[in-house]
Image (tube, rainbow, N blue to C red; front, side):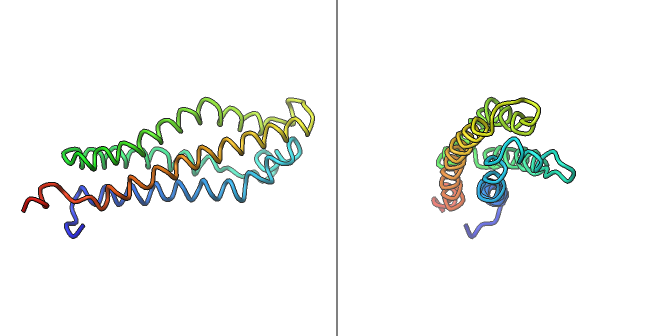
Length: 164
């Protein structure tokens, strides 16, 4: 990695943004979701009360930046087969996670936010929130697995520099 070029810089940016994403995942799952999803519908005040938290601002910023950085890193590393494969792994995991997020996680979050208006017992909301958290931890673990190949891509030598 002595050669600091566009290939390496694009991977560094991807690692930083992917790491930022992972930090957001851990923070949300350790600090925000447990109290929010354990007391619905009353705890919905955290996202729709007088001073609501708007974590969607973070997610709508980090997702496009992280995906774009992975695509750019893939483009800069395309000719290096080992790097290309290593970058495609977290990109595929990420895209799959985004599809599942749009299909299940975001609609559930909207329902949680609107739970005071939807009816249902606190026990039903609690079970639903716990299921959401469990599945979201699995989604987060998959995202963490994507970091390893990205780091390996960062230390993979350029095939041209090896031949020199």
